[in-house]
Image 1 (cartoon, rainbow, N blue to C red):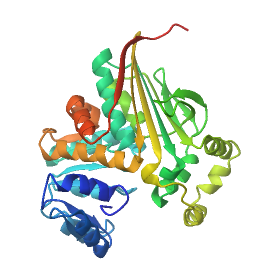
Image 2 (cartoon, rainbow, N blue to C red; image 1 turned 60 degrees about the vertical axis):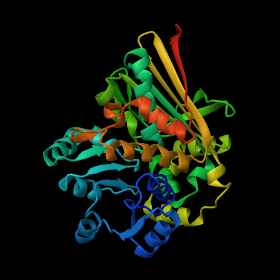
Image 3 (cartoon, rainbow, N blue to C red; image 1 turned 45 degrees about the vertical axis):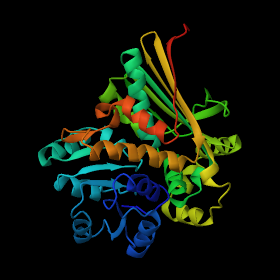
Length: 358
């Protein structure tokens, strides 16, 4: 679903050459799906799907082995449809926070196990690539007591309607951060922290942000402290968003009618394909600390590349056991990072350091 969107069409293009004649681009408008499929080539086909229509979902999933969802669905209709059919499934939608509360994750997991479905949650950049960096670092230091993830995006990466709408919603969210084994209530774009991103980005101020991987790391890694942060370039925009949160303007901007107007009025800045991004992940275990960093241009392409790598893991049987998983639980980080490297995304690992005394 969402196969002709900014990221969806890139995922389909990434996979089409390896799976000729097997990639289906699906969306609400069949004509747009057909155009996107023709542009991708390699036998890709278009198909209509409307997740609000049960019959449309059933027809769209006919003959499908792996479903990749690229749109946000509050009711997770496509996820549950894929589980009922025993399919493999992954998605790049950002909202996993609700799965960390109570027994929600166990409910998805038990349903997937019963149906023989393989569900891989958290594809994309954060969560997604960040999760696999956490696993690689955990393998070096022997586990995780503390996990900190910081992502830098350009304003151009947030100029698309879906990305901009998501940001406006998140600005008004009150969420938990997990510190020393205890949840603490906070708001986005608070508690600024200086983060050293890889060159040529350098040091930027990063703010707490409710990326979804943080809520499940205590469950999947046993970490006692998990923090996720976001920086936006230019820096003045980060400061403006922090001011909107402090003055509660963010709450007004997050209301649906206001969001709709702001999304329509948005203006694109620089070319998103050339916009820089940077990711830093740090894992500490006892006195040992390890860091992974990457930088590049075009966050949408990196998101698609990371997602396509996980789809290959599902398609090639590398995730063999039914159930619901986060990537760090079931994917080999070495082979995953090799797939990224072949696509031009290279990760720098800094391991073996000691945590400095305070």
